[in-house]
Amino acid sequence: MPIYLSMQRVRFSSPDAYEKFKVLFADTRRHLMQLPGFLHLTWWEHPDDPTWYNECSFWTSRGALYDWHKDTYHKYCKTWAANGAIMEDIITNFELVGTRLLRVCPVCNHTQDKKYDLAQEQAVLREQCPQCGFHFPVLEETPSSFAVFKDVVMDNDGTKKLEPEETKK
Image (cartoon, rainbow, N blue to C red; front, side):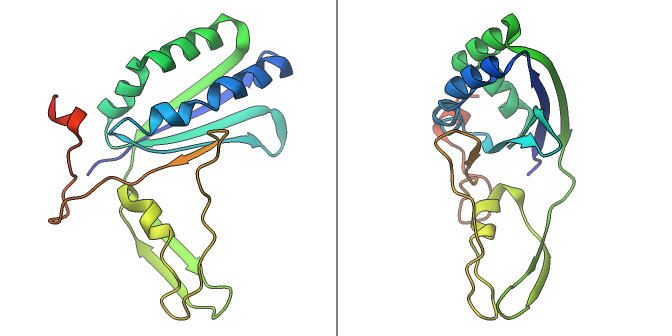
């Protein structure tokens, strides 16, 4: 399954604009989790520039990302941002070529280096160390919407299970 990724680098017009943005953004997860093609969203402050923010989102297709752009909530938030809240928004979109997971267990030093399906990332990240059973830390969804995740639901044969909204397309 192809995965589509979107990255944004944002500067707000003022600290107050960013504080207002956080209120709007906190509700984003409720809207994203209802979209069949949504997989992942993270938002963070750049460690060397506190006025520079980064967002990364993963989607099951380019069309899934466009579904988010057509969402009423997203449209209103974008209009709000464009009316003075942001100074700059640099958007980069690309298709995934591959994913790898490199882990070294802090208990037994077992090293894993494996390819994995990004559509099942949350399940893969929850896997314990196969040698000693160590549970690696996993970031859970946050109320601020700065971290929102879900895996694609798969049929028994390994194909993507269509959600009700996707069967209408």
